[in-house]
Length: 121
Image (cartoon, rainbow, N blue to C red; front, side, top):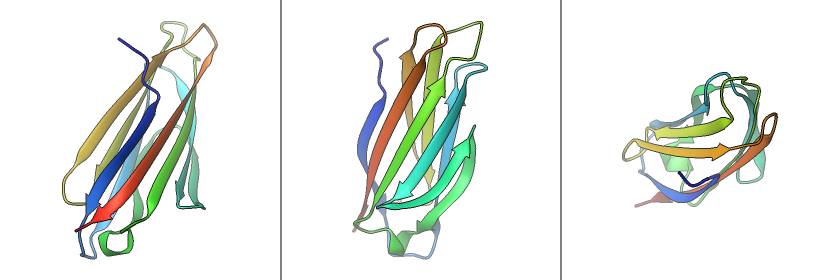
């Protein structure tokens, strides 16, 4: 499988007060990672490990804004050199899940970058 460490996409939101939520899952088995999540240029959170159902904002407030995620995953597993990042967005028009992955050298690191533009119709 080819390495894939970047994501550039659009997430569709609506004009409601419903919150858009972000989940980040760090993998493979026993790997560790740290993520920074920004909305436009504002840092929303810096988090070690997984991030579950983090509130990005209300649908109606996210139009034409950009979510930027930067995650570094370190190979701390003795069993595998496989790293992966699962990105989940919910609360907008539909649920989306994206899987990114990279094989690294023993003790190496993988840097993942995601840019998600919010589009409202």
